[in-house]
Length: 220
Image (cartoon, rainbow, N blue to C red; front, side, top):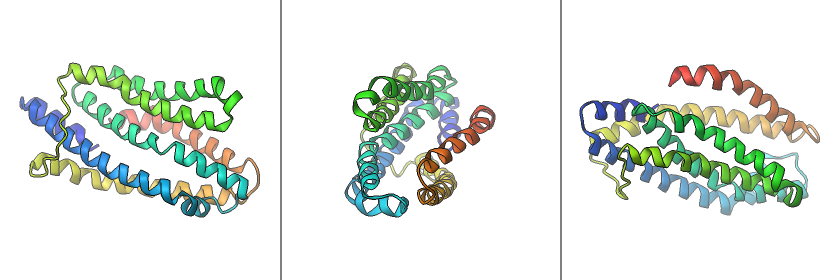
């Protein structure tokens, strides 16, 4: 939502080098923020998870904390993948961006078939991390063909970089509100007995299907 209009405008005015600097700035700021959050949640998981899952017993809490810690890498890879998707869309490249979520889901399905029989639900958590990594990796080659070169620096004085971050704020607030709702309903579901959380997650996935098939593509 924030990067596509800015990057596409810079491409149109033949300022590709500046576009890559803006993208690198956004990536670096995201990495710093997400790394801090991931490390904090890894340490505080025994405190935070019981608040989110008040209906779980000791064994369920221990397993949820373990799974949470394993999957903390996933949001980082997915965030980088989302940046890659935005840049590819801005450059008119849609194939890899469309393949990325398919790769993500195939990795989880593969983990369910290959890892879950021997590792249990931990195998699925590993599949989530592998899928999020695949979501990013499948987009790197077409991104490089576009000329992208990562720069490990933050150019906070660039007006376009600041504009991108400003545009991200309302989108982040909107996504945050939906996630808070998801957490609250999950917390309530943990008090309703075995299977309630799975039922809710399945229902939520069904809700997302028309949004993903119709709403998101039209928005992009």
